[in-house]
Length: 296
Image 1 (spheres, rainbow, N blue to C red):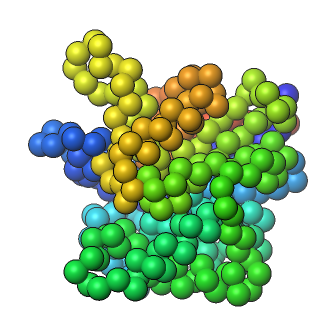
Image 2 (image 1 turned 180 degrees about the vertical axis):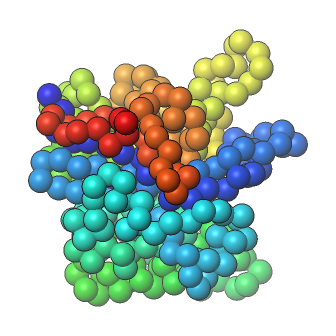
């Protein structure tokens, strides 16, 4: 029995991203492809987004160009590949406020958004700091924060303080304060609906980027199981490692069940296909009765 289908949908990518940005301390080790993706969860009468990508205009486009993003496509085009329209989405869980996760809120007119209160309020604080401290705003589009406040004004944003169980049936939200960002969230799907689930998936947001963050990337045998955090922490690398431990504990330390959204090698682990737009759809699991969106 499976209540939800889960797809990771690539909407753009950076062909050559510094490896040290993905794996802490991997200096002078070259470049990797960094897919930009969001997640769709569908089932129990709901269509859910985990993050919404960025808007390729105004300052969002400036940041995309700055980071070398290629082949951007709108949510309408990307989601069509799995038979979903942006208008179908009723819930959006925002893992954090970086521009590539919180930029397309206007594309989902019927959705309610959820974010950690500390995440959005601390970015308002960071925006108010003197320019000499603007390193903290490296991956933030201030317009996204303003649009988030607009969602709150329109009663379409719910701010959360800490973890929430059963935000929807079988779906839990967890938080890693002062880690990658001030209030980064991850999403846990108990796909059999049980409290002590035997079919749990963790959608990690940017608390991990790639499999190496979960298993280690050192050359020596005794380093293979050491967590190596991502390269960017507004908070601390210690908190990222603690969050990694917590995420893996939810899935019995089955690394395959913690999904790094920026991981290109998902295609080697789960059924996937490349669309006519040159973007990847990865199928993590299917709800009972759902048809595959990646099989030919």
